[in-house]
Length: 158
Image (cartoon, rainbow, N blue to C red; front, top):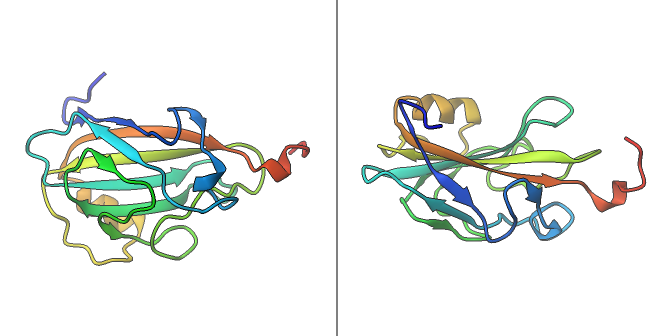
């Protein structure tokens, strides 16, 4: 059901299915590159896009894997690309940080936001600053969920 204030984007990927397993290529066990994201139902007024990728299952609370903003309103974020300005992730670096759960299977949400403005944020901003800057500019949003469990843990009972 659509929010009254914001529309809903349809987010998918050629890299994995919604609620499916993220291939190792996009994780710390592989190349550690971002997967492709397909974005459908962009509102006409969209000026820029923003992405927040997060893991709510991290042991110390939600871990931010990827913050990106001021992306041109495009229908595809290509694999291994940086189409916008990068914020600081939970590892203290800018750019994409692939899934790397310390134990068990974790959920990874790729939240995509269609915005009616270009954000006046410098590279390296954190999620709190990004969310504050976006607050009054979200036209539509959508999410893609992927899961990942490191194969080295398959035998563990954690």
